[in-house]
Image 1 (tube, rainbow, N blue to C red):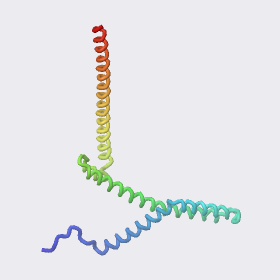
Image 2: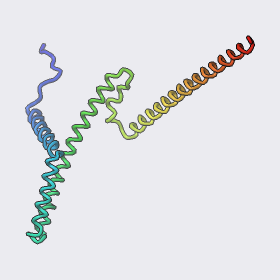
Image 3: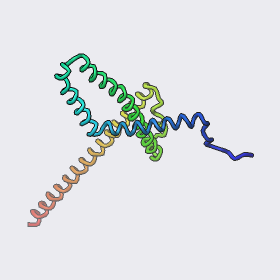
Length: 174
């Protein structure tokens, strides 16, 4: 009997797809990091300054305006995909971290690990449940505070009674 393989090796076509995704992910990560740097901002400001400086030389022609419009459109179009890729990666990482925390905490509801697969209605019901739990916890904490405050008041009254009793004993003994 051949050994059991829980994770069979990927097929050749899957390996190529995975490699292309990894290359895109690596390029997207580096580009996103660079695009968010101060150097990228300074390059953008410098580009706009150079473009603006050429305005009088080109008599503010249509061609001069099309250059900046085309450039900004292309950069914006590409940045949409890079930003979405970065948000998807970060969101996935946050979900994995939360899943691990839910899994690690004994009292946690492990059903929440798959919460992102629920419908809007199911998420709303879950949200309502946790809001009710929060209100109940607030109520319990409020009651605990009130009991503690009453306990402090009782201790204060006991101390005052003890003082009055002591003075009464002193007055009777004279």
